[in-house]
Image 1 (spheres, rainbow, N blue to C red):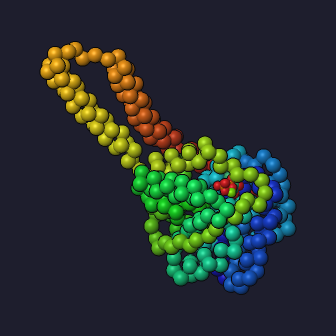
Image 2 (image 1 turned 120 degrees about the horizontal axis):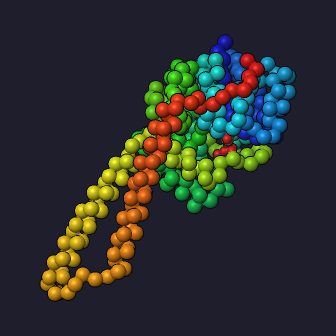
Image 3 (image 1 turned 135 degrees about the horizontal axis):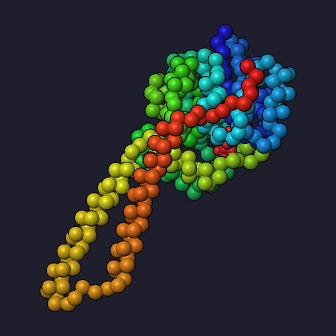
Length: 309
Ligand code: UDP
Ligand code: MG
């Protein structure tokens, strides 16, 4: 019998873990030919998630857990689950039931058809405003154009199935700034996507705030592309060219009109403008330098304190 491993990162999900296990179990009760395991990765939760997981795993053989020594983040948690999964295919999904378990049979079916990666597009429920939908689409388009991997729509979700061979490839990635959806897209293999509508969180609250989203976006861009570095160089060229032309025009004008070049305001503006530009460029270089620094230290993505398998 083929085995499917479900990997679920859980950070403060005490109110959700039992329910999600229940829902997944129901799905597999309806599928005859598959064995399954659920690997919960407790990412340093501060609530009773760990206790709930221990209770659940003592009741059900298919429930396994990995406990981190502290909070390492969503992406390292998913990676840890995949590193420790033994299924013929691994499905990663969120622990708050925003990723509907009802989609699992369809994912498995695609996998059986020969796809190594089945990713999902998150479509928005009707309640979400037009504005929010559009800005989110725009955001992913921008991200994709700045990055070397395609993140449009399909990038929007960490709900996906990977064949064991793709998981094996993932296991050997040793990069510090994990951006799994980018890595999955970059990896290749035979891929396909399916749509789903994200549900509301079952309980608890989202730990992705605006700041985390921005960090995530920057990770997405800088982990997959050196384009921003080129952008810095292009901007530098553009503005030096403009300033040469501008100053040339000034000098000619002052000869023709027989006036002195004057204007504090324009001087200050120029200084401030170029000061800003230099800071941006330094910042971009700093981000990459920081990445090199982190990677050189070669610390692990996560530390496991305890696991029950
Ligand atoms: N999560 C995690 N570590 C974190 C933050 C989140 O393991 O530091 C998990 C969380 O338990 C959930 C998933 O990542 O299963 C997605 O998080 P969340 O629901 O907060 O994000 P959103 O759905 O709002 O994007
Ligand atoms: Mg969520």
